[in-house]
Length: 225
Image (cartoon, rainbow, N blue to C red; front, side, top):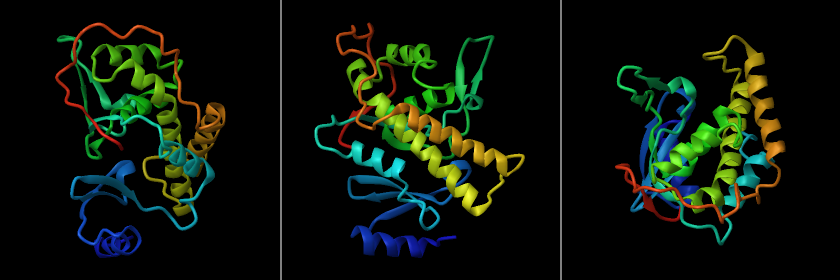
């Protein structure tokens, strides 16, 4: 397991960030993951087993996200792992809450929307959920059309990385056996294949009308991520 001093050494040597502040994220998929803060900049640093970080699917989507011409995404507080089991619905009040915020961080809001779409089975199955999210006014339809498919590909690449690392280290935490890790990696591989080229950026035609209503109370800012 990497120590904090080893991570600091890597940041100084490889990233040129000798004074960066580190915040460890523990639990679930956040294990061996740190938030890196340097002045006004923030990154997520994730440790992976040797040889796993350069997988083509991961490299391709990160390259696509970094290409010139993409808009500055709206950012805000992310849950980072909004699986269906994290939602709790109160039938009396009609309100829905979300639990398990151990890996929460700030980042592009599209990442949480893409994560929810992934857990629901893809963009088509998540269409009703996506429309409800857009109706809050947190994200514009234009931004969603431009970036959701690409962010979904990133989310599946993260999923592939997660299960590949678990297979390599024989991590059986929370599962019945190794076959569950194998299935997770295969599901990610099939999804990445189905999504096609990471250059796919559009979800629906831009001519669709924007949702009515104002912005919700959730705070979002726009900056290059």
